[in-house]
Image (cartoon, rainbow, N blue to C red; front, side, top):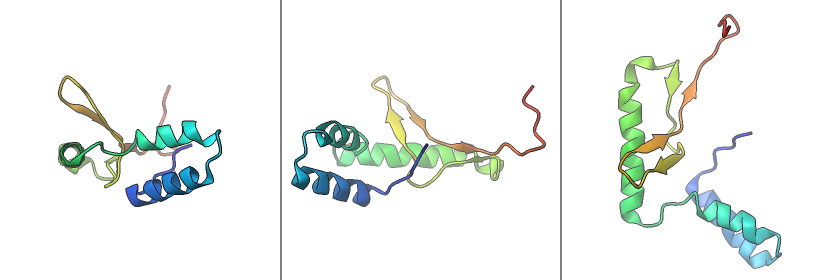
Length: 95
C-alpha cells in the first residue's frame, strides 16, 4: 500500500514519535527521515527531477502521471528514479 504524505506531515509525525519515546518507534523514525531531503541542494535536485519526469511524459497525460510530491530516489552516479502512476484499464490485456 502506498500513502502519499506531504513533507510537513512527515516532519510532524517524526516529532510526535520522538516525543512519545517508544523504543519501537526508532526504526519508523529512521525510515521517515530517509524520505526527507538532507539539505536545500538535495531538495532542489529532487524538485528538478520531478519536473523533468513531468515534462518527459507531458504527452502521456492520463496514462503516465507524476505527482508534485512523488518519491525521488537520487543516484550517486547522477540521475534519479521518480515515482509515477500508470493507468491500466479493465479492458487492458496484460497477457
